[in-house]
Image: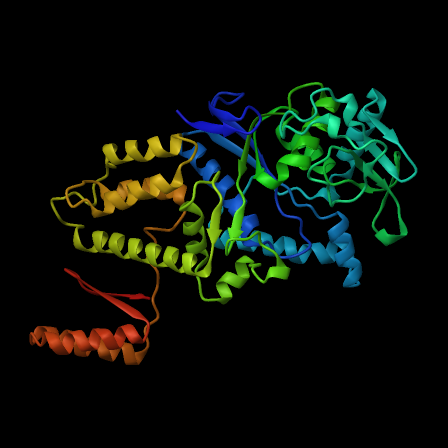
Length: 454
């Protein structure tokens, strides 16, 4: 049975959905003021692994990922580039979806945008005002956290740390102290032409309210799983709970699943430190996006991992080696008595794999099970088993890649084949090395030589 570490209870719990065989899941997406960085995508891959494994367990999963396209950063960026908010954010929204696709993150049920759900936010805020959980000031409408008695239950933050008469009206939050937060910000000239003229006042939403409004619309007021990075526990997710439960009079989410920080070269990622990478930066440096996905899987989602280009290179080498071994299985053994093309997966290895994944999605150990399988010369049903495991890993392990080989390399391969037939092994080895210098790997199989890119 699947056990997940629930941030709300601070322990691993057996996962039980609200409705049998169905899971409703919300994952905090990207604020589209820039390209997503590799820390963002660790969270997105972690939630993708969870969704894939739930589906592997035969749950029907409805996953929502929001797009934050209105906040301080998006408004500042659009004004700086003299573009409309929509034109500015659309570029980065499209990039986010493209990056997800490159990383084999399965498409979610819906990607709601904050700007397209203002009515839902206004309705929720009106309810909070009516119930006395919110109040108006000169610059906006705020949530009174003292009125919500269980404030702090997710993060552990103490209300006694509340700074008296201090409110948060921007998206740069004090991570240590609890403060009343903006649900709606009244219009300010610094926002340019970004505003909505609604009943509660001309202005725009605060950051937190969007997730409560959109998750309720698509998943209901009470749903199964909410995911995100550990940095979102406070104040974002704490505030989501407060405004949602105060507004809807019922529990918001059953399981809160958070991934840990990803360090870069031993430090927190920062442009000022020169250790800031987007997915596009990684590709420009010659790495495959799936090498980055493999790197993510080598660390447990609740453990800090340290990203370096050397570590990414090691991950890419491991993935390439794994794919070569699997490719040789399909070529060498398709007609063997070892049942490589068996219709049945290897139950023993699948059971071991599921045991690791049931233990709070332990992907590092699950990868070890995969490596153990491909190296086991006596295991049956390997290809079917690998296919089942890759439904979760998402590494395209059985996908045959088309390799473009130049005329020069083709000629060298032919020369090497001729040398091998003549049993001139010394010449054959020299030709292999020359081909390797040109960036190609040769694997000799019973069906002939197989060429792959290094």
